[in-house]
Length: 120
Image (cartoon, one colour):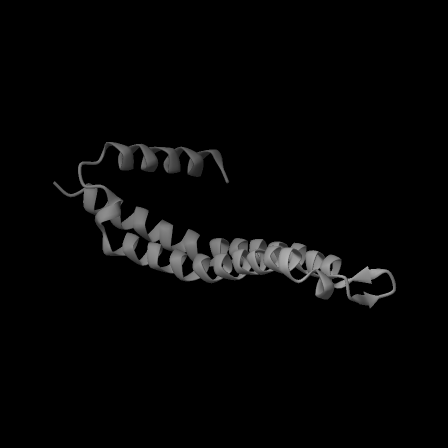
């Protein structure tokens, strides 16, 4: 990012703050929110659901969780390792979506608002 583009971005953000017609009322902003919900909801449901099931299994299915999987590794520890992998994968998928989708749609929201705010 160059100094010139940083100054332009800062002035664009200041004009958004001073605006009487906030960009959150635009259809572009609604589209951005729909896209974010469609991305975040499945990631959240899978990760929280997995940890909820893991917690319930640790409390109520102890004989199953102590079953040996490989050597000294039992099913409980194996599922905990899977839980770490799920967290990392969810974070990477979110970052990928944020870089590809959210940033582009946020730029459209800002540009649409700046185009509308310059008119009398």
